[in-house]
Image (cartoon, rainbow, N blue to C red; front, side):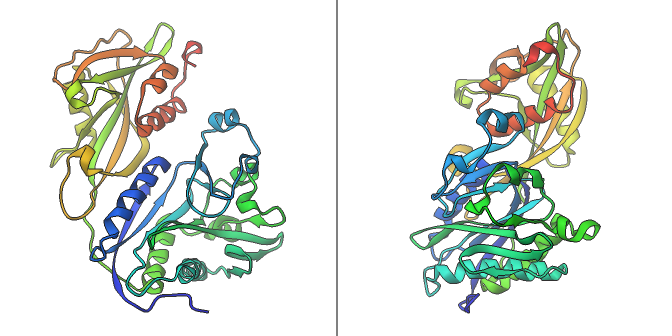
Amino acid sequence: MNTGFTKQKQGQFRHFGRVLYGAGLLMQRGLADYVRDGDCPDQILLLEHNPVFTLGRSATRSDVHVSDEFLTKNGVELHRTDRGGQVTYHGPGQIVVYPICNLRGGRQDVGRLVRGLEQAMINASKDFGVTADRLEGYPGIWVKTAHGLEKLGAVGIHLKRWVSTHGIAFNIDPCMSHFQWITPCGITDKGVCSLRTLLGNECPTWNEVGTSLAFHLSEILALNPVPVAEPSQSISVTVWRRGNSGLEILMLLRCLSEGRWWSNVTEMIEPGETPEIAAHREVLEETGLSGNLAAMDFQHSFWLEPTICGVCGDEPQFNTEICFHMEVPADSQASLITNEHNEYRWCAPSEALKMMSRESSKAALNKLLTTVAVGDGDQ
């Protein structure tokens, strides 16, 4: 069985942490356009998504066994995609690999690509003492356990003009109960496992598995790694106060020249600054406020779309946003010092979520609501 390519080409391996699912789709579309030029290196993205169920072309809503309201309450998104297959789950503790590859020029073999992706997962599993294999008729990789055959890694790709998108999902230590809310890949008589369920305390870290997968993908896909530029960095600060009716969020309306959309405080980190210093500086510059700054334990990366962000250069550019929240005194009023904004409002969290256009701002606010006591009037 041919499980790899022999014709060599260049590839760039990009190791991200968290990437919100919508941002991941934009990454794939932008990079698919980039690699269509046969002189550009293939792009291999290794990342982790927020909790999300994705419906492939063969999936139906009935493959998800819980309501939209239940998903919202439990912080799980639902997306339809153009990949093959049925419903699958992505979330923290799972490594997702998107091989954005141009197969033209002697590599036009989608079956070999799929087998190669499976083989990379099989080889990575072996690195950590787990024996996995293919199962005829069931894409992905499987492990024989005391409960029967269980899937450790899923595969589903989309091919357009010989450029691949989507890819593989390999379970390291995800929330296994989320798989019970769906019929994974349409399979009802087999289970799902993870390196954690198989190895217990010997489970490797996300970074260890990412390093292993990248090595095996490089070999099997015959990619010569090319250096990549580190993403730029920015901060996001959700400013809030304890109002009479409960928690209130500060929303800023950007001026027409800035796009006229409601947002929290965001800005690039300047050379020599720590993220914390940048967060304090930007809140003070944009609103005149200061307060108790706290890290959210949430950062995410995204593609800088050239026509929107005004970036330029031959290589795709990315940014990592580090999120904070800041509590200010209950009677605080903002002063719009810069010319970036022309209006502000203090809003209940439910209103702020409706006003926000960026999924990252919504994710940060939802993260805040899980860590701060919310008043009865805020929902």
